[in-house]
Image (cartoon, rainbow over all chains, first blue to last red; front, side, top):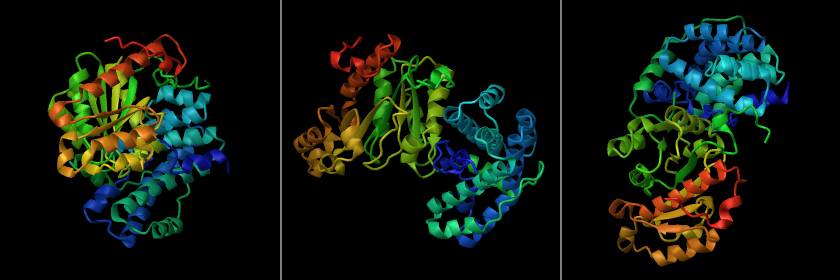
Length: 204
Length: 236
């Protein structure tokens, strides 16, 4: 494993993800997530759907598949406009940070063609730049799909952070496999309702 | 400077962009009122943009928009995910993005104000996000606050002690606050204000001076910090 991949998966990477809850804020507000058990099932569901899709696309982007084509495919798999916007914002911020940390022709080319790529595309291309394998890029994307929401739950519900990390440790990260199209209508709805909420702590 | 891959407007040396001014301080000390007063005082002479960091969504941005002190489109709000200090210090990505968005849409600008969400005495802005910072206290937080220090009080380029009109009511001794602040700030300025009743003319004058100093340094290619000792005149 390359050191770059560790930096890329560190929640302290200053790329704006700390303010995204991946639907968790709305799920907490609606009472869907209120304790460790409900958190675990939310995260497991997110991992099997949004996480698996993100893993597949990050992996393919890392393998050198055309990012513009992948980005369009991922857009088609993201029904909620609010989720598209959140994914593109995180992708844009990650790309900007990555260009400064790991200056490279591949990242410059991506920025030129897609200033605001979906996050898994930015992650996959950056993973390739730091020397990670497509499989590792996929794992990083899946990990990103659950760690942000888990941290948000700690902040919003005051759950024991160690217990939440134990939940994270027991989740099975999906192996990147092609370009899956698993959807989670509830996550779409949560994202849309969150976007319309007048009181919000998180961007998404 | 090796960051040749950065966009021109993102250049770390600040050439060709607005001065970025952070306004931080505890909850309720008057950051938003000060921001509004600065917009009112400076809107006629400087090209402005404002980024707010609310605890709860767009409350402060909405207040500023309603106050009519600035074109509403020049005010952007950033959500901070329960961690206002993270968004101004540890992970500044969303704020930098908002500042650059304002500069792209309305640039060139002279001044972009980044108002922090209300936080604690340790919350300061990253030098990667702002060029100057103001820390705002109010007298009702207690006149011991300057003595207790903390990075906000000790290191901000300007310390503003607000709500001086309340001092008699809360038993705060402004002389004590002034003396204690001077002791921990090593000569950096402190201004006492009552923004709600008297506005913020002195703070606005300080900000104007910073903007002129900034543009002087960065248009003429001086090294950052070079001009500080010369007491550059303020081109009003």
